[in-house]
Length: 287
View 1 (cartoon, rainbow, N blue to C red):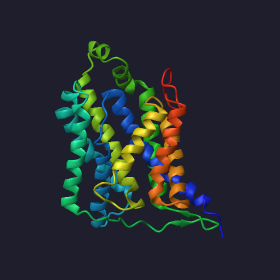
View 2 (cartoon, rainbow, N blue to C red):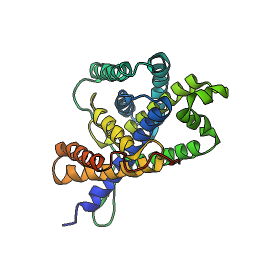
View 3 (tube, rainbow, N blue to C red):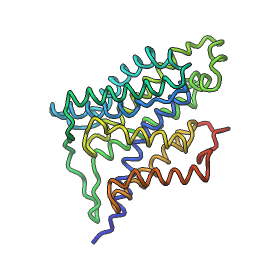
View 4 (cartoon, rainbow, N blue to C red):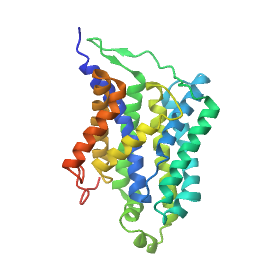
């Protein structure tokens, strides 16, 4: 009998690489907008439901659903950023509560629209590699798409187009004195990060059940990744997300799915106890 380890590693690689896209969006919000967005998981769920809606109409490939989900999430994210996040930034307690309320509201809307029961999206037949290794097509598409988007984000942040984001993250007053529209850049960044979460949800939608509350665990993982890896390194976020994806998938395979997130959180708590500043030192790190 073949060892399950290669399959566990491959599936964890696919999931972790895609979760990195959501975590990078969370890092953008924390770094540029400087708020904690507890509605980030709801945009992940939105992407999954967009993929499901397209699948019902015969379009079952995640690569087609991801751009549409990103556009819809960007529009909602910009609206939320402009109408609520920007005005409420000076009230640190109101903002997390407000974004959490938005997430719960979306869950209720999704439940009324699609029902509380788990839904599924049909996936293309996988490729079978030598040794019986199952290579899921949606996994390959999700991983490569996420890697390409994160590579593009890393280039933007390190090149001239990302200068305004870096400057606002460092000092908003200087950015404003140079003529930058700080408010607009904030809510556009917020919308872009929400689009990244929705794209991740659409790309991962064939991997499991689509439910109104499916975004809660990815939200938690995104916060964990940003806390441990830091907000300044896209590469660190990508690698840590892959590591957590493999670790979580191994726990789900060898123990049970219920123990997956418990083991992940326990490992992160131990890590942060040993290294409170995280794996990557924030000072001096730039992609």
